[in-house]
Length: 136
Image (cartoon, rainbow, N blue to C red; front, top):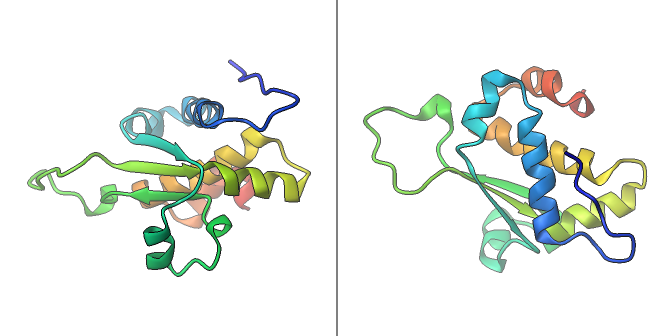
C-alpha cells in the first residue's frame, strides 16, 4: 500500500510513520517480525536535552535515533524497563529530502529507519547494504 502524500502541505507525523511501517513491511522476513516489535515515534525534532547530549549543533542534524539494547547485547535474564524504540524526526527528514531533491520521501524514510534498525540488530555496513542499496 502506498501512502498518498498531499501536494500542498508538508507530510505530517502520521504520514512519516506510515512510510516507516511500509518500510518495515518490505524487510526480509528474517527481520520483519523483530522490527515490528520496536515502537516507532515520530516527532518534529529531538528534544534540546537529547541534541545537547549527542553534541548536535542544530536540531536538523538528527533524523533518527534508536533507543534500546541491541539484540547482540540482550540476555533472556535482562529486566525490560521499556520497549526498544526508534525515533524519526520529521522536520530534519523533510529538510534533507528537500535539500537532496533526488530521492523520494519513502526512500529517505526507509534509509533513516534501516540505519536505526542496524543499531537494534547489530548489523554491519555490509548487512545494511544488503537491505538498503542506498547504503552502498
